[in-house]
Image (tube, rainbow, N blue to C red; front, side):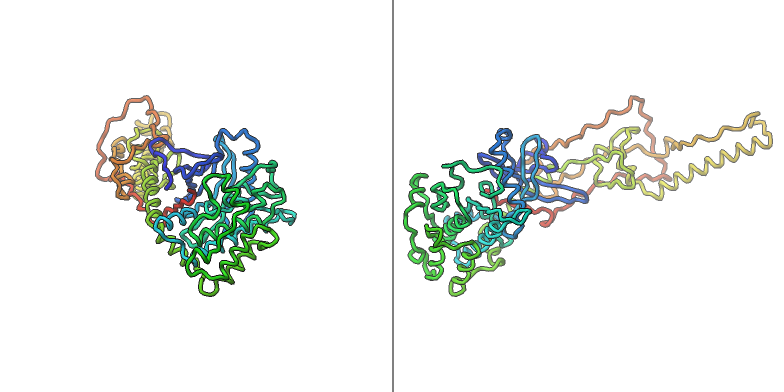
Amino acid sequence: MPKLFDPGAGRQRVDRYELVGEIASGGMATVFLARLTGVGGFQRFVAMKRLHPHLANEKEFVEMFLDEARIAARIHHPNVVPILEVGASPVGYYLVMEYIEGDTLARLLARAATRGRRLPIPIALRIALDTLSGLHAAHELRDDAGDPVNLVHRDVSPQNVLVGVDGIARITDFGVARAASRLTATRVGQLKGKIAYMAPEQAAGEESLDRRADVFAAGIVVWEELAAKRLFKAENEAATLSRVMGEPVPPLTKIVPGISQELNDVVLRALDRNPDKRYASCAAFADALEAAATGRDGIATPRELAAYVSEVMGDEVSAQREAVRAWLAHSEPSQITVGLPLGNSPSSSVSAAAMSLPEGSGIATQSQVSAPPRRRAGVVFLLLLMMCGVGAGSFYFARVGHPLAGSQPAPSPSPVLVAPTASVAPAASAAPDATASEAVGIDPNALPSVQPPNSVHPAAPAVAPRAKTVAPASVGVAEPAKAKPKKKSDDDVDLRNPYR
């Protein structure tokens, strides 16, 4: 679950995105849950990966970060987490990703192990086929000239496979991917990726890696999905590296009850240490898995995978949604309508503070906004009629030489209409609305108080206040209407937390 920021401490923004909470943090970047808002109540939740500020001047790290954004943004496939935007702000470089509701395959495997279970074979194969499909799309990437990019992910692992509640698995995190168009190059002897999921040639530091290294890593992931245990992981990195380079791979038929020999053979071929004996591509690996599972093993549909994910982590997803709903409800600031035409100023956007502003402040109050248009028109019409009568009388007196007219024509009335002080009641101070936290059933005393930004009232003009008078019954100015808190439905907030 994201570590939500304290709404009472003020809003944190990066360009046009509002940061809601912190999802995860590593040595190079931090991932945040962020929200993008727009006109008409539009909002969208995204995952923002932001480079640590202290690395902003480190050329190698900046170029690696930009490589990930530039490469991944070119891959358009349902089984690849899309990059939506990359930018630079005063707090550092950032990239914006789609926020996938669900969790990582690593967490899914951990939950199953905690219950003493393993993933059902059809579920494991559905995730494997989706992952291989996304990887193949990345391997087939071409540049603007149509030339192959020769992309190698180099970090295929359960931590980088996101399994969504929509029944789709996606590959993510191309931060250490290798491509011909990268800005940075890996130094000789430098290993990038997780040793427990490296192909032998990658672990040996070979320069000429190709997509078959990802085939081997995907084979490790599939083996661990089915066996419900780690394949090469040891007590330290040196021991892990030794197992990657030479330890025989145990057959799945000796570990997984009921698995077919055909499926076992497909996985073992993907794990052959000789690249020439492996599948040449992830697409070929996926085809072989699908053909081997057509019999008794079976492959789950996306709908069945969605049902399984909901069963395993449905309670946590619901808790995530409620926690962020409460945060949003408590952190929404009141807005004061300044400089907007009354006809375009919705009453729900006027705060209780605006209702008690002194006259002459230049800010539309709630009583002005909610006054019935028909009655306002009546008052204006009455004033116009009075002025027309005064003008006609003056004209008549001047023409007939009435002694009250004098020798000079009566001056024309002022073009500025000023309503009598008794015709409009001063805006009354209204009690604040019920907080949004009450609308979602949360004790407001349990939440920190919020001080909305820009909530200081403009200074009142240095003039004596007018005497308060009671409006006559004929005017009938409406009392300020309390803005009803909008009840958020499940569709209003689409919250996702797979980046653990």
